[in-house]
Image (cartoon, rainbow, N blue to C red):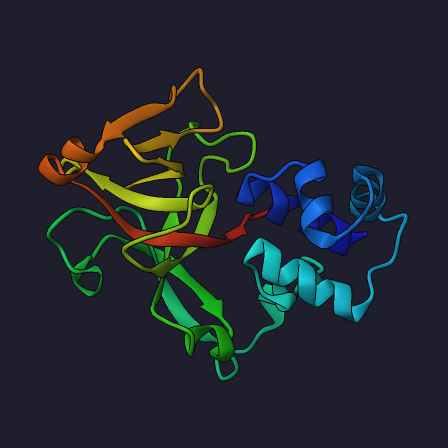
Length: 207
């Protein structure tokens, strides 16, 4: 059951519908995804690997039964700081507003530089909640549809989904009542500026 829940969490974090995920996985209909997420269908090892690749998460994330994070020893995991905020002009390693630590696997750490960020506010509900922690890979660009950490006009970083077009980018909060979609033209991206500083690759929630 927990594998299905983790697939659902990763799908929602990625901003995909069950139909969209079914097509990417090669399933004929969304009902297969629904049965997997409900725990009615088992997932083979090969399919689990494909889910992880499509959803941009680790296999460990999909296999996490909720207790794994507490059981991982410091000798096995790589600690990264949970930042309370990210501000323009301050290197990540220089930020002192640290609210704790999370662990990532050595394999994940070998793929790049990562930081964790505590979410504040309700603009990404219901997928990402206030006080959730997101694991972010440091990178200056993401694909359309990804959830990213973005700096706008030199202000504190925000977590939003990015939709790209030839004219610019739209930042999308999953709760439009709190944060309506906001479009930035290519000119505004250069002049404000609008900078991507990381891609959200995992969501961690305290139960």
